[in-house]
Image (tube, rainbow, N blue to C red; front, side, top):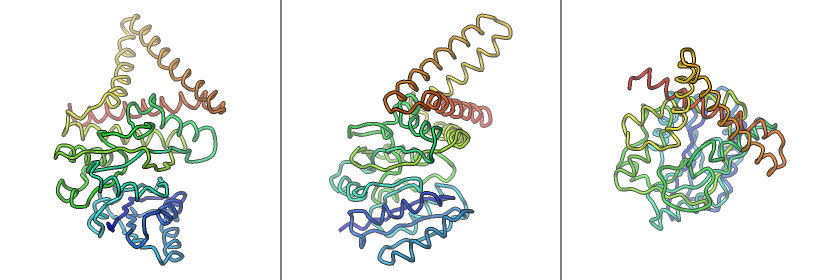
Length: 329
């Protein structure tokens, strides 16, 4: 049977790391064929204590805790790859909780030759109680917030440009190269670009499912999407043909607001165009919020969806433009 290495970058995840450990421990894939490598980036909370306690109470399961002094996600992943003993790598996140058959399905898809990197969808759940966290989770799973990122909402299997986490044979990673440590975000996407350029395929199967806990506050959401937008430009400079409309739309929208706002100082019509654009934008967001609120029976979504989606768009788009100015066109 194929030996599997589950690799997880981690930093200050005391709230969810135990859920992940229990989920991997209860997988349908045999314990004897699974090792779990958690690479901690010097956590300052009780994450390491939680992991140590789990290791002590589960001596029948192989868990290794590694220390990442570089404190970035790609460096943590590369450290795990170097230490991994498995033939198949299953990359997970400390915010995630895979279903019981996750590893089994990933290995089966790889052995069936469906793709060189295979994975599934996110079942996005609130990261905390309250209407704000529920709104953020709903927005993160809606096409209005994430465009055509199919791994967040699709029900059909097929080939895609990227997916979260993924699983692949270790020899494939050795052939195309490890994760790019010059990117502090979008490392999975860049990895999949190189995979596809080498002739590989990325297979998404909704039957492979992970519960993912979204950010729980608007500031945390803004920081997350600022990081995504800022580092996306670095990757697009290297692979300009990989841009998708979901990535171009936020910076174009933010740029239009800035241009119309500046032009309005000298040209009154620009001010009216700006107001019209904002009116249409927030009308669409509000209708989406109302629709989801009625469908789910959660009144807070009426306000939460517009606030969440706008935060995602504005943070991503602003960060992309800032990175464009800072690092040159």
